[in-house]
Length: 478
Ligand SMILES: Cc1cc2nc3c(=O)[nH]c(=O)nc-3n(C[C@H](O)[C@H](O)[C@H](O)COP(=O)(O)OP(=O)(O)OC[C@H]3O[C@@H](n4cnc5c(N)ncnc54)[C@H](O)[C@@H]3O)c2cc1C
Image (cartoon, rainbow, N blue to C red):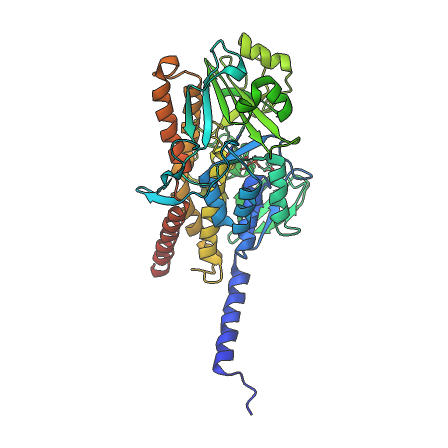
């Protein structure tokens, strides 16, 4: 009897050999930053068997004890990233309108990649994203009626999480040992077939590519554009700052009543607005997230290098800002509106999340767009380097990054600009806003939120994949 393997075994061996070759040729991805974007990207890559390491500057997971609202676009992105992640989000997040718990909504598609929900939720009982109030009205908080409501439409997944707890959830889903803490990136050297990361502690690491998920003050972005003075290197001051706090729900109810505290509310006013929404399940641990925004006519923050983004502030500072104007300051809001990146990648370096499109938070969608980024990037990397990948060569990275840039940049940069405008609308700083124009304002806000929430992520990924395929085929023919 022959000891040589039969055809099927040979085919099997060849297949395994190819898979092994693929795996050894897969570029190792270095993720810089283990915030919400970096941690989620790690989960997405682990699910797709793509080797990676995460480098985080903080000695331990670092997030704020503040609330974070997600929309249905973010939930759809999570479903693409990892089904278990989506299930967890749907289970632990607080629905936007606590008075209208989630029902099964059927999703249908409208033109232009916008998803809509069938009208099961229309009319009575339709969940509310935010109730908008006239904050200048001389009426006690618990008696104030909304001047208009913006419904929470475009599918399931409107919900809020506690930032720090959500990061714990993400950390728990990342592969064991993949993240190294205390690694503050100082430099990147692009070599012919790899990159060399240099950390402030004097250590280095090699990788096939770097994905910068290092947030608003991204070092990766600065290196990618060629230095501190280049376009897109630094965020600019948006001209607004914010006070943030979490209030025990019981205390909030005493002040403004359970009706108002139980639903997301936005108090509008001249040059100021206040947003509140509940975070956590009803009960003794439930909190009310409060963010009070101020238009800073003194332009108190001018450079991100000379001053921190945050200042300690007292209750009196905040009260002063909301009664007489003037600077109390605590949280400067910086973005890339004045200096958008001409490209999200250069060679083997890519930026995603806030590192690519730091935005003010006025559509409540910054982190949601980060989830979209991760869904698209992970799908492209899977297509290129997964088991049935288009290419095993690390050179194909540029195709992935350019397909990613083509898919994401326009939408991400729209958010940055539209978010700034939204705040001016809430603060009656634009023409046709203010007391006489509530209906006009409602329509404007609904149109913009439709762009945020209505994105059809499945279609976006299909288009990005087709783009990658055409680039890879062109490269093969060439
Ligand atoms: C007041 C406010 C309210 C908001 N509310 C909402 C909301 O309700 N909904 C929403 O969707 N979005 C909201 N956002 C936006 C949202 O917070 C961001 O879009 C999101 O947190 C970005 O996540 P990220 O992981 O990209 O960046 P980050 O959260 O900034 O994480 C970056 C990580 O990189 C690390 N890092 C930085 N530099 C280095 C380095 N050199 N080396 C190694 N590691 C490094 C940091 O330590 C950090 O862990 C809000 C923003 C603000 C300011």
